[in-house]
Image (cartoon, rainbow, N blue to C red; front, side, top):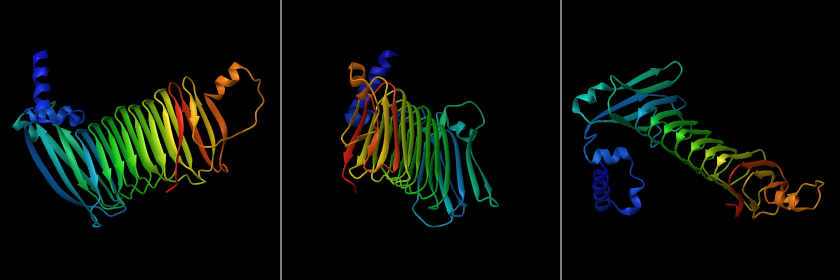
Amino acid sequence: MKNKYIVLSLILSSITPTHLLGKLSFEKVYAFFGKYSHEAIVENEFQLPASGTLTINNTAGNITITNEWKRDTVCLKAVKRTAKEEDLNAIHINSNRNPDKNQLTIETRFDKDLKGYVDYQLIVPTKTTLQLNTDNGSINVNEVNGEVHACTLYGNIEIRNSSNTITAQTEETGTITIANAKGNIKATTNKGDINIENAHKSILATAQKGTIYTSCDQVPATSRIVLNCESSGGINLTLPTTVNATLQGKTAKGELTSDHYVTIKPYTTKLNKNTRRELKKQVNGILGTGEADIRLTCNNGNIKILETQAS
């Protein structure tokens, strides 16, 4: 068995650039060597008003959502893949449309215990509310204006160019990436990093085992940024030069540093080794005039508050 893995690695190295090897999923590797060499494509179109709700419940496979039109329809392409051709008919793409509530639900169903998966690709109306769930697979969403709720058991989540509220969770393993979000963000990982780029409103992010990287284009006066690394991993928070917020930060076993000038709130203490040690680990102060609310907590990692020019 060990020799087979060595041969597999050598073949992959010969056909794939080294920098892409880490991005190859096991499903893609299996597909290349024929494990899931049989496929069937299901295509359909459903009526759904622009303000409707789309729910996807997938067992194994990826979900990709894009917005490329203003029609009141959902365009679906589902690719079923299995090891045996006869198993393709044992995977069903079920749909249920509730016109009274403007809801459409699409689900994967297996007749029996078999090895296979379904990749979903959908084009949706621009303001559709999305409820996306997959046990084993990644979720990718781009250019949508409705609320996004994305959850995986094992898999990454990537959401870009959204203008509404985002809720993203990886329950076991997976990284969350959210870029150019105009709405509020809530992101939770168990084992994986959280990457938030160019945020514009409030952020609530918790990583059990992982690092939180966050950059903010804007920090409105009414916004809250709450970042928490519970077990291992650090926090990197990049803020505009003109940020105005109260700041509370604490790390149990790391150090806290800030590129921004912080006005430390008055407190009474003795000047000794313990005081100097605590000043490296926590801060309670004000950035600018202090309107927004920023709270950072970390157990076993560093907290870095970085500075960038406002866009």
